[in-house]
Image (cartoon, rainbow, N blue to C red; front, side, top):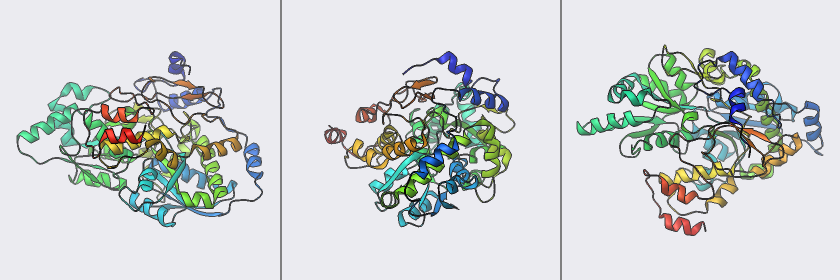
Length: 480
């Protein structure tokens, strides 16, 4: 692996560079796309079509229905539908907007949806039967990196600012000030404050827990964590039913724009370029309709390539902001999608060019190491009570083998490894263990920890705050 941080600063300005604007985001993105892998380049359409035309027959199931939740990161499915990428590969697509992640999970399990926009840990949980009936589910496609934020009410923000002014001025903002507020409430006998996340087996749950725990807050005892569907977060914050939440866009910026909340930290700042959503299908569906699955993946990859060209982002905003999809004002959706983020009402937007990543940095590749990281968090917080084979479980759900078949047909660069260490790159770097070199992004964690997928049990053991329901020695024995 090679790393040229100075060159990277030129291509992708750091998030705290005040000179970055939406215009500079477009310039930076275009410059960053000129790499050996052609990471933002488009493979000629004729080559892609010809590759797929090599199949003796078209998709086994041409009429498909894919589910989404109204979030900006549903965009790749919506764009593949609206811009004709599904149709290009022989699929007559319908996009179904669902009310909750439970709806997504259940409808895919029952075959009412052919596939869906899923939380990255959701296929793992479905396969293990966590919180629902066990149903083997797979993903061969990562939909995006980053995209979430943690937002609190104005009242809580003011209490935190008073409790620890220095901590609140830091960037990224830690939960140290929140810890002081919680400690003060305990001393005065007040009940725990209520925060929300979108689903028990969600990136959002693990992110708000990670953020709190890094400051010594026990998310299972010091606060109350509840589930609220993303579009209902703002209303619940406004009604004081909750004091804060972790959710994807545009529901952080919506609260900020309405003047009812402050976003403290984004998921990018918690873990640079963290995996967020995946395209999930039932295992039996993937095995019954392999050509249909491949066609959908080809369409999604092409849509992601088009979307990650900065000059196309405004059109993406116009498409997904529609009532039938995200149903939010374009100005709100546009904020994060075009490389800036507003943390407080009336505050100046700050540059955050990697808030939404759809293709670059090998974003579409289903890393087994990402799957294993989610399993470590499920273990850490007691969602998995019995020892399991971590590596075998991850490999049964995340399917880089299927992705590579599709990548070969499209002629795009693909990693030749399935695992990578997270937390060691503060700047951009080059992945050379690939069919062609791939430009990668920073991968640091807020607390400076390093995740080595070769040592998952050691990683779980390293956390000071955890609520285990299994014996780590027994887990280690299972994973020898």
